[in-house]
Image 1 (cartoon, rainbow, N blue to C red):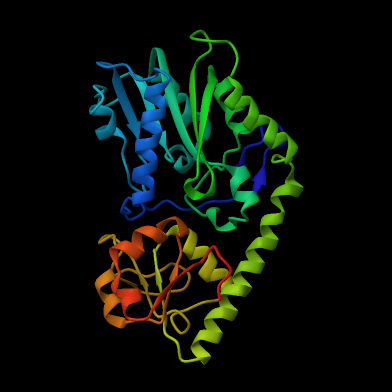
Image 2: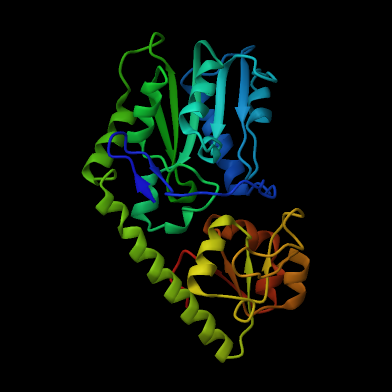
Length: 326
């Protein structure tokens, strides 16, 4: 990863990936957060009944269009301009960040609002979420960097909301410089002040993620080896992109983790890149009656426990990969 000394945008040094990702199933945690976000945006008067919306979707699944349609906001297609432009974890997948933001700005109708949701770089560093970094994710936004990018595109940050999703997610609302108030509100200035205190644009701050990667990989491998030595079967759940890097750095293959289950039919029957661990269905996971299931997306814990009670009923347990395994 490198960080721009001028604007503070963090990106991977090199990313040669071009294939499309298998479409993921939208987690219930993301569904609930979307409903919360739309309600907050409506509460401050940024939704116009009868207004229009264009959405830039993430390959990880999910859409706000149904929620917005229920509030009288009408979707537009193609390259039509809209009163509301929604981007929920979408722009980070664009190789050309400047062109991507310019495209969204150009589609914004006069007086309109651009909503950008992102997994905060400050969160990634604070919670040592090093494996949020991966090929296909071309940018990692601090509010500091995003405000500067918006300014270069002729937009100004207006307000922001924070959510617990992924340990700390931000929804930033922006409009054209000529529209609305001239300065960001207190919510934005507080985010900027926090990032200044934590030196989030300092390369030395980001370098701590390397230590986090080594530590988590060692803990994971030690736990899997101990489980195998004790005769306890461990399988995984959640063929997420963040799992790929963790398994590869830890040197885990199908000998230590025979399979990873995922609810997305598009992923089932494939293999995890770098480790060749097969991806199976939840039904196959349940049938194998594992002693433990390593959960690669911690936010899914409540959802999977409710969806697959057979795991715990058979004496198994869920082990979030983001927690200390043991």
